[in-house]
Image (cartoon, each protein chain N blue to C red):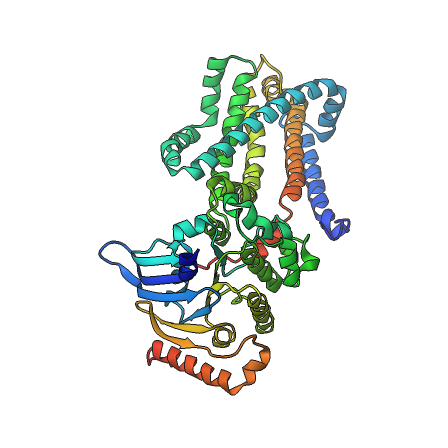
Length: 266
Length: 263
């Protein structure tokens, strides 16, 4: 459908969200607007408490918003979840410990099977193999390292071919060396399965390495301070870290973050 | 799977020593006070000479425990599911449950005997009642305390309530369910014994045996019956541990890797 093509991806318009009791409400998201096109990788970065995870939950339909609209592939979040258009990778792997790796990745097919029709479901085994988990199919999550568990969680989000992927600091619990390997693995896989991605992080190099655009968020209330383009060519490799372009971008993002965080401790 | 088979003496010897000391103390006390407690050999002799009597009574109490506990466990878990899925049901039923549960079971038992006679029925009911409450409370907590982030993943897939129950809540509740069973199963024996106390005389059972023998100041029989009640509890708890290890083998590794938001 042409209109679907036109609206593919994520569109946020003026979304607002407050928490707290009537009369003492705190504004957490202040009229945020953003579009993520199909095949575009957008990172959201900001200090803790700026509302980036709240934003992600709102886009995932897990949190009702007070104002504005969230559209996914041209439909409401509710309709999009019904059609299984959203793949979520939470902060922790959140795997079912009593199920094998393969069964965990099959979960999205087992659930809401009505939405399985007319879509390009992937073979769970193949997806896991491409994530380097071919030997772990029949293992249980408790037998895997943290990095491997997170890869299973990412495989689970890719396997049912959603059009939008939402990732909430998926690598934040891993050590730096593992993180880098996970990043490049994700990038490789995404390169051949270009979805619209919204990736919440608080690592500047991670945001630059992965993204087409970086949204820098400020707090109190959560707002978009700046949207920074990352014009680095793809496919990207770890060699990029050492280039001048990368360092310039890193300086720019860090500078913006400093401004956002006020002049207090920066 | 245990790595070592726990055969090293340092694992079992301390408990054996404790039991040994307790036995010696008991024996010494009993020999000094023959009208207060029986000696261990008197109890042992009674168990051997009247083995068939004890066996028959143990079967009766065992049947009460098995039937009553099964009914209480199933009822508690099913009601917990209903309450977990429908908040309004919790608000409607929980106050009644609490009222029933704060009523002393020792007080309910005679009333049930009046209502249902001296047969097995009041014993089933009392046993089921004492098992029911810890099962309900623990199952309810377990069905609610599932991994929030796994729940988020299921919700973004538009999982139905049934699918969330099937894929997450049922197994996720099992650590709590087994914690509940650990409390409930010993209580089941208490329930059966108490029910037999108040309906003693008519029907058999180890609880009846205790009251009858105690009334006749027959110390060896009293304490032999008590020993067998205790033995039943040990058997139940051991069986539970075996089943728990088969069902919940994933639980320890799961808690080690699952990160909950800190509060």
